[in-house]
Image (cartoon, rainbow, N blue to C red; front, side):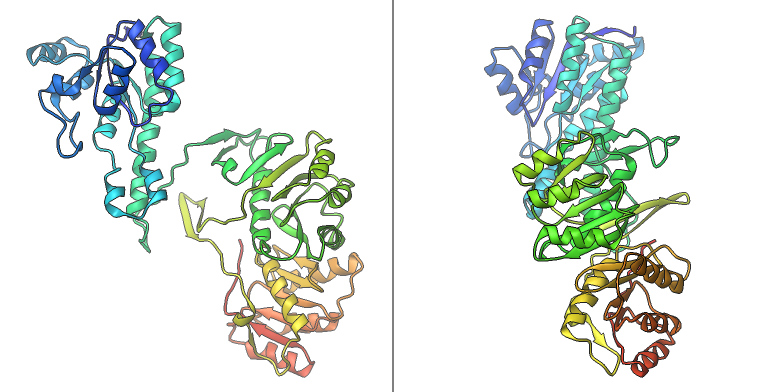
Length: 509
């Protein structure tokens, strides 16, 4: 039969919050309860009869609780198909049928986050619980399983609606959820043991939270976000985040993380590329300088600040259309103003931390790498020209290096006075990227006299420094490493330019 009444249940959980209503409902339905340890005591304190698992098995909990339920009289009652042969064996060995298993798992991930003590962590690897969950989920045709306190409500609703019974579809859904719990748990344990491997033997990721998006990159594509966005942001207002919003927000966090501890900095992004960024004494000045770099691309973009967004800045940004604005905080009066446009997405950032690993799907697999967390500082710079850059040029060179790191390759960033004034990205040649950057700077009225240039990779020929020099650029930062580095250095020396190398390439594909 598809519908099955629950007559007996095994309940043994670590988390007991939210369990009482379910226990009381099972008791009202006349279900015989079996339990262990703390859960047994919890049920008894509710005044509800319960049989100890030790009474069923004839064995006490042993080995400091490592073995409690691992016994044929428990697993036989769960795994038996409700068919003549199996039921006869249950009778022969005095094994009761178990129609429901409510078991959660020791808090392994929470323990790893809280301590480095190996013994404490290992003791939170659940053996009996995971086995009970898998057994009950495997036999979903006859047994219902609840593997998480998040599902207490689901089962309670089913029992009330169906008078203490479950349908096959209910049991299948509970089994699906249970295997999700068990696979996530196993992945967490594998990740712990695999944490120091330089060459992991398998790619495993498990994220329990998901949100179906309106669509993917384009309307004909479906999209789902797997993650816990609330750990990074508080969504204050606005429409639902889209696939493209999320991709752009990720890029925005990447660039502003470079300036997390800097003076007020504002960045504007479009299609994951930074089209404006500036650091100034006040956030309003930073916004005005960032917008000046490309006020056309800013339309419909993503805005992000590294400090509290004040009313003056809010009034300024309110004059253009944009999708998302992000800041670590908003002044109350600024928030009131920005929330007047209901579709505008406001995110309060809890932090600007970047994950240590990144990955993406490609071909028939996944590629994983260390995230590019390298940020150059003054001591990382090696002057390769006769002229040493001035202190102001060094400041701008480091600023430009942060900017170019977050542009799609081939990338060029032009900076002057802590302001991105021109950028070229995603070009098939570095010359094209530079010419694009120069053209954008001139289009928006910037003089390149005294500006600096950053390149995400080395110059294979001296053509880029020559073009930069002719445009008025006086200093260059690049990784170095070309067999023809000296050609670019010689040109700079001949024309009074300063050039520094970092030894670090920042390709972004």
